[in-house]
Length: 215
Image (tube, rainbow, N blue to C red; front, top):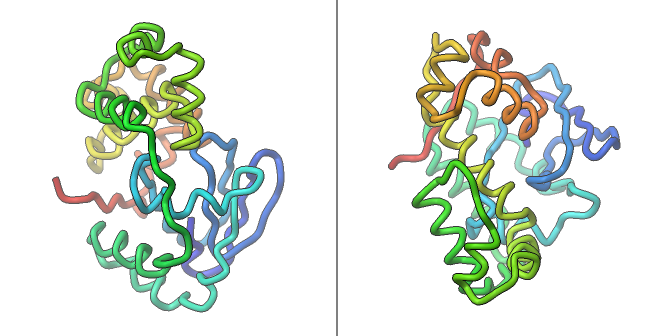
């Protein structure tokens, strides 16, 4: 999260914070309260960039001190409209700081399978047995690698589908149908759980924009 015009005011795991830029763990309870323009970069937990940033986390968050030194470059991302440029800029800012950890191939296989199939439900016992692991062991390895459980990762992928399907003027019901949710209440519950915000916060906000990566 980046405050483009002023420091962010955020609550993470019940702790109020002020900073120009933060990284926040994917399973941390969080609430963004800032009034100024904000850039939120939604990184995949299995992406190399997140793998480089995640080791900095303590108590669910970490400040990014280099953001103050590069505030102008970050502000320029506001209107670039290019997700690849945003990612490249962030990768350049963090280059060389931390080497991503090595991931167990079985964990990588599960992440790839969830991404490809995006199942409505996840029976971790069945999946783990197919990989020669117990469900508890697989869940622990997955969390060690990506910071979240497989079920939380699946929620992340479903919310990505919401963000990719959203178009200005959509109702919550239309968005739920387009993104494959059971109904509008299911979408509302998931959005609140993931982002501590209701879909109406962006559905009716003319200043809300999504910069999507190219397929």
